[in-house]
Image (cartoon, rainbow, N blue to C red):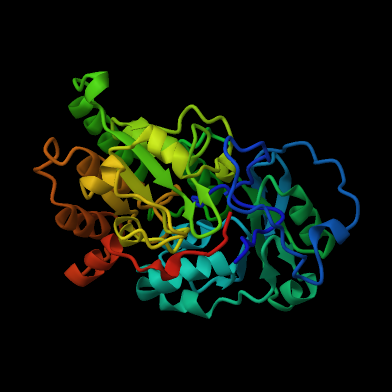
Length: 406
């Protein structure tokens, strides 16, 4: 089975995501497959009129029935002051972020199928079941069917800022388009979250549902740093991410992807940090894994792969039993909260705690993650989660994964 990828891909997300697009670069190891798919939508951003120069940034202002904001491309966008219908393109974590930020998903009438897969298989669909009604048929991969998008009658469309052609195509159809970036801030999940909130605050002034989340995330980050600062370099856990893994490809996180942030924030060493490839270009094979021999392995929810696939050598005949993380049963699936936790989002404080408690369980033995998750959602969002909800977050099925996703 050949790996199918979109011609324009999201680094994250998160990724997360998580986000913006990685710039293509040469992989350090040959991928299992490099096949590319044919176009799958009838209308693409490239078919729009030639891009015009971005207008000069103007101060944020609101007057009458419109509001003027500046997006992550520095473009000035005029929006309706009253926004009732939202569509989100290939900035995959944003529907979850919007739902938690607004306390409702009723305004989200369209989003990408990658976002929907997470909503259906995580807790977001339970918390805000209306999001499961959002239309996903208007976009395939990175290509938009403009006619179908127009039928959704959006007041605003959010798109991944690096894919400027997407924004131009949407604007050419007479629809306000706001660029949102996921990778502009060196994969710093807290900084990225702050920038998203700052942008949303321009569009939805007076909203305070995520107030305090960033401060709490920074507090957690600093507490972890304090607890792990005394660990000698030679004793720090050496971790590896599997962003995507199946019969045809294995992708990790080099220094230019979210995995680097999570590992270093938890006091560990990313075995792949020597790879300069950005985003999902960090393709490797088993020989590289053997050379690195990581102590801990994390598998994202962008891939259907599960820890058991490594323990039982289920994928492509790869042999994992000699890898230290597998021998020690230290392979973990990333939690699936409001969205895939590999990317920035409202679950960032919990992701930091998850990384620390799995990397250094003895050092963080006093942390009860079930208690932490339930308290966090209650204190910050007034959401009461059941033990079953939390269990599902930390034991997600592979159904949220997107086979072939890059």
